[in-house]
Length: 391
Image (cartoon, rainbow, N blue to C red; front, side, top):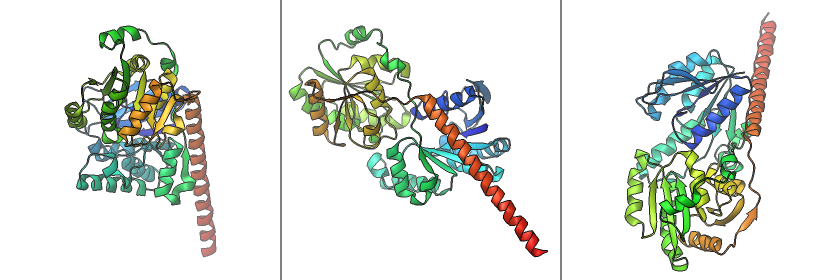
């Protein structure tokens, strides 16, 4: 198959979604498919190149994923003419992908990571107007009729079905893949890392990821004062991504953080297993999660987790864990204290092999192409009958 991916961000842009699609695209290329990615051009990147068997085409968008919605349209239409199908994702790449698919008369699939309709005020620190605008734009994206909707978890599928019940038949779940090897392997230098961070004899609580409101790190910071009363040697380490849009959030965290809370800058993903294995407990205080990679990573690293009992987290979590009420510092503190007392659920970490995810995407592509073929065949028969009737 000749598959055109239209994605607002792709490698070398750093992020969880980018890692997902790099694995999908390169996995499909290894299986013999012709894979092209149309994405927005980052500074100092080439207009075109091939990485991992995937042809990457980048369009200038002033380094803005919002402008990409418009600047990508001409190239999307051009590339769609030689593609069998288009695969896109929420949010900014979806409209040009849908438009190109309709002009080229080929099917389009959209991968949905999360559905925030009606929840932008809850999951962000946006004001009323900005939240309304984003809610409106998300509704516009989902108002377009895609040929197939792929949700990355059953929780996301349920959320999408709640807002788009009329598209249930076109909606399926394909879990993201996960490579557990780097997390299973005993990371080198764990003891030295503790010494370097002056954490000897400390009960280390670790949280990491994007510091947006939806990740709930503010609740973990509030919980820490309660934790210290029961675990005096506790230390909370937060490794937070340094995106410009979250700089004010990180500064606010630093202002409210009590003694014993340290905020570290983001690390390359390959270095995180060492930190997760160094910790005595990982906290995942999210308000929502489309898939919950942190839960999987800690599960496979063998580090106990205190995680919000919400969205996809119960679906993917395993290993040693405690599920707690979201948005509750008291519940988070109680969960960490339970971990300190070895009072947690123990289950085998759940496997999510990339091989299975890619095979499921291939099957979804074939079913989508077959449905389009049948539709076109039925249209042709109807046209023929109409022409005969007019004779």
